[in-house]
Picture 1 (spheres, helix red, strand yellow):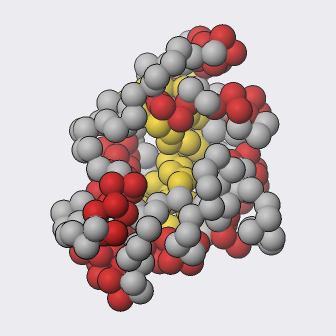
Picture 2: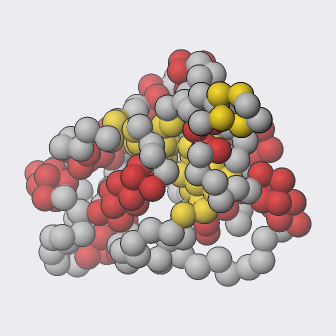
Length: 229
């Protein structure tokens, strides 16, 4: 590709999907697959959080949540497991800040790799409350995804409207021609599956079959997870 007579080098792009994954389910997996294809991502890294700053600490241990992620993605060569948030010292008392994860990834991977942070559009409405949120876009791109179970209930803050205006693109090539700095939006197949609903189903002793991989359900049963509220 050429721009103004200059060759533009397309760099590899790695999707970053963080979360509690409590438990991981087909909604996570299908979203990651579709984004990998539509945005031409070379890889999607699943990064379980140890101590999520905007959610209560999960009752299921980080090790169990991490094991379920590894089981769920084992047969997909596009997917990779990344435990850097779990390996940080003092993970119980220190929140798992996204900025720290991105700094760590950028230090490890260098500047010739594009990082694409995958974020639900409902989560974006609170993005300006994140730790050092304005620095995040200097380390990665952001792909906003509409989750079927979460509809924005309030208008964007002025600061986020300005942020979108300054960084938005509909040209997916932008994500491969620079390593950070753009926000894009992507529609995905709506799968109305949530970790909360799965936990509730299991607590009621009902089957969660076809909501999450069988390997994850087997792990949950063996370790007696989500057996009670």
